[in-house]
Length: 84
Image (cartoon, rainbow, N blue to C red; front, top):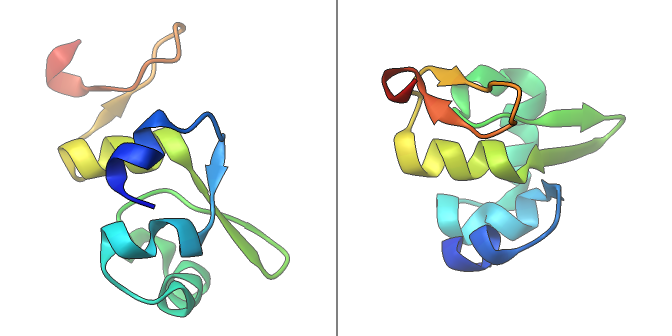
């Protein structure tokens, strides 16, 4: 998937295979890093058994703003701390 396809998607979660081209690495590498030290990925991940899922909105935020502090108010819209 391209970044624009990810943005346009209505999926709540993505797989490592879907973000591999945007991140520029093999899905297996994302799986291993997510299980070993997920903080080093930069974007949020959820690990369910052997499966790694990536919250789409969290991934989009990371792509746009990097590791900027995030504030998610009651409306559920991701914003950087400076934008609040």
